[in-house]
Length: 610
Image 1 (cartoon, rainbow, N blue to C red):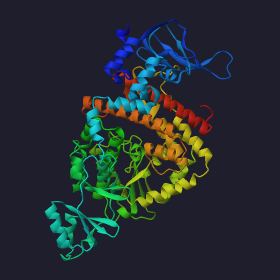
Image 2 (image 1 turned 90 degrees about the vertical axis):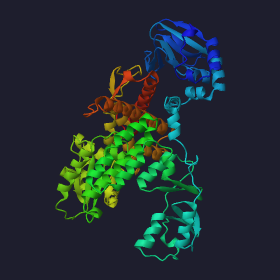
Image 3 (image 1 turned 60 degrees about the vertical axis):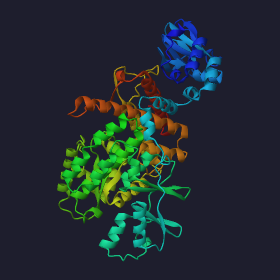
């Protein structure tokens, strides 16, 4: 019977061949009748149980109940293991009972402790949370080589030693040194500060501005440098270059200059050609040219995901790309003299930077009170139509700038926020939830900030609002059975069951504490840093949300490949049959985190155990 033990499943696949042989030699077998207790809470466990056949329930007695009622946490079935934490701690934490006739492999406690002592990954898998399990699974996936490749650090061989000149060096001398060193930029030291001058800067200074060749190069340097830490991810350097529309980043550690990273160096590490799309966006001189550049985004998404890039990084890069496309289209369609008086905002998942595959448009326009622009609505209708042609679908709820309801003066915008926040109507609550995730992408961001700051002040100490707003996070059931297993064996809606409760719950808490970030992951980081949410809970929620988004994205890409043409009518549906056992286990653990978070919201906002 020990020969039937499956070593291919995590965490046993983490063991070396010698460790696996040692485990097999010490395996025992247990036979249990229906209703028999395998481990009782408080008892010393025999070891770790791995189910060969049958079903086991993990439970504990409910406080205050005299009829022996128990709360069931989860049920384990074939190839599931349980008792790892209990074996390591030396005492069972719950009752484990056979629901039906059950056969288990038993790994003795001494063997478990020996393996934990010699294999750190095996130990982590037993003792850590969802984050550690997901990390271990990712490290042992088929795409691990590419994933590690994409997660290279800035310090790993791409930092260039910069050419540095001091204040007082002439334009002619600088140009000569740059040619001799075969570089296209130079750092100018002026006192304790550094500025940057590129070959283009020198050319513009001499040819366009008629600067004499003996002029001080320090006078044309740019001293507002974008910097990155050498231990940061190289992928983040690419994101920064994309967002800032630059080709070089200065590397600084502890306020000391380390070197320069250039776009060409970053590109040598990547094969997704995201830089090509970015350059095409910036160079587009017409709507048609921008349309062509935007066509490469879906291909880029597929490349990133298929090569094992972390979903967080992919979301950041794509959010930057989408923002640039919209900003560029805005520049092409809105007259330059109007742009300082208007602000284009994106909302919902786009505003949070959590959109990867192109989903519905959610955008609005805020304009200065008293602005006279007769063509405003006509231009906004053409703007929305153009985005649809670019592949950004029309919003079913018509939350787009083509709808005059979402084109407002600053005064009208703040009034709408006030009206929505004092209304209990479902549509008003939905509009508010979408609007508070907004971020500016084009025009004058001061208009957006003025409205946001006013709204934050208006909510101060409004406990009734937050209680009602939080309640929406409980609208959808968590797809777990009474026994703690996944509720639906076929398909489930991961947005309703997992993503939305986390996003909206975190949104509510962030709004209450005036967190400016809109991205859910960054909101969690800020809330943990402020001590509002325990760091451990914030990390669990981060990993659960990341898992939901990753699994959803993978199936969206699969459906897109199968359909080629047409719209995915089930973008939030997960087909459980297409997930492997490890993914289903992680999904179950993630939904338990959601369930616990909803309980936290009930207590925090006094929602009456809804």
